Image (cartoon, rainbow, N blue to C red):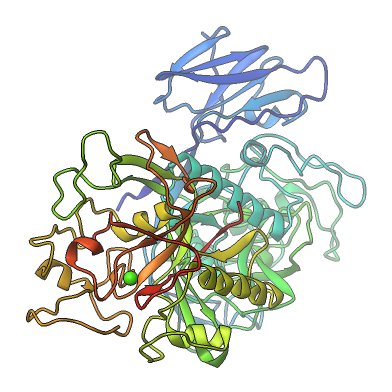
Length: 615
Ligand SMILES: [Ca+2]
Ligand SMILES: [Ca+2]
């Protein structure tokens, strides 16, 4: 695994609000493999949004390759260093490509909390063994004002504290005046931008570190009060803390009674000694929001702790520029209300696997409907002309399964199984199926019946507060159905195989219930869902068992690429997919299309649920 995670932000175009007429301007444009930067004033560049150098040879428009390592640009009226770039004031910034250095943290076990004899410790730092089973990436620096501005388009540090005092403003200072909610919003927006650019895999996300991830990364193997391997010689003013942190006694002063006398301030990130992993300012400068609710530690060993399920306060770590030495120790903890903000709190980010988006809808009588998340993507819908079992195309007539490229621009959820009779009974209070069994797929339902089920589920889940605004339960579109069925395959069947026969076919027998059993005898019944092999995305019975209603009216396919197709606006028959228990092999292929009028029903008509954004 790469030790350094590099995030390239392509096409993020955010211009700082220019407050004064004299302020410089900057804009970027990608032309082919070049990045064109037009600006007024002096141009500066940076590879990490922290260390800046003037581009002395540049004149506007300045052209570089998009692969150039210097990826962060700003323009300023005259010469200056990074700390004097004030977002929205004397400097304008635009980020076309941004590189954010993230440091890889190996999984491992450590002792969280502090030993009884540690100078400056607090009673609630109970030492206990913590194992982190997964590695993660952590940002080298606290999130800077420049980075926050680039992502959020504003700089909250440009505001006075409750006493009317301003603190340091500049690209390279850590962002402050951000609540836990603001920090989470930043992570979500950064994740979304990178997902949309395709530069962050959808399985990963930016978020805040858990408290355990924070302390483990901070310690970098040390067991002392500080990540330099040293302990505190004094709990207030302390030379060992001064080596690694901006804190009360090197940014301002406390008087002899321990009262803060003011004059302190945040400092530029990365100026104190880093820890063994290369992380800066884990001690001091700004407190850093962690993901967890604040709670008492376990005294026994724990694995991948995430804090209490709920709480009143969120955790911050590391101390800050206006606190005593003891507050800046690796084990020191502090709690704040999550919408509170202060000039002393900022954050840093981690990249972790995104939580699984799969979930279960729980119906009354404990009938759960497992739903699988299907990522957006592009696939070829239809079947090649030489696929065994496909309808032959007569000269001048419609090719029912014409190959064409389909892009689904949004992910969606789809049922892992066909809707069962138990689930149908639990929600609708009846069971229309001709062969009964709670684990059998519901059959003998019309398109109208299936839609009624979806509408009732949407309304009950919405009133229970379990369905986010803007989403509804529905049937998959025909394109969503085939995309989910194929799960990346281009063959007649979703196990990557083609048919060997249009009637009895051992390849189909692996993945679906159809008219022939493996021994050649005839199948005349429904089978419990989930007994055949699932496809690569974990979906069962896409081939056979019951035929599955789709949302669309039946229509002729486009011959050109299409995005998010939903079928014709009107029609007489609705699409049905996958074939059923009494169909032949050729009728159960991934590309096979069926259609029936919306009020028709028969022994093999069932459906599968989808959850999608309301169009
Ligand atoms: Ca810090
Ligand atoms: Ca089926």
